[in-house]
Image (cartoon, rainbow, N blue to C red; front, top):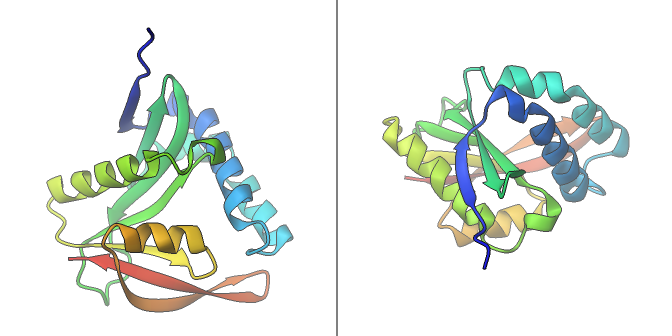
Length: 168
């Protein structure tokens, strides 16, 4: 019997290509039909392997979900960027490759990101997601997030509402 290793760890520069691929697949799957095609394509293309290599050394923490040596997903986190909110931590992104969704791995990655923020002394947490991203909204509500605030994002002249979920 083989044992499958599943680990959440800090991303390393050598993970950049795999993170870039996970990002592309997750964003295409998640945002097709929500974000206009041209804007979505440009956003994905801006985040190639080089961008992710720099991100592994950047100010935000970048975690990867490693399933038997495959980067199945990633999360970026750090200090809350919305200074009007009292929560100190923020998960900027949390995405899984489509074939790894719906089996509890997102819960694992989210839990590790929350634990890391707490260990860094962050009190409270905020996560933003597009209102039309029903899977993400359901995920965050299901994990105790309170739908607390909203804002707008502009994608190629299309305004989309975003929701801020908080945990105190």
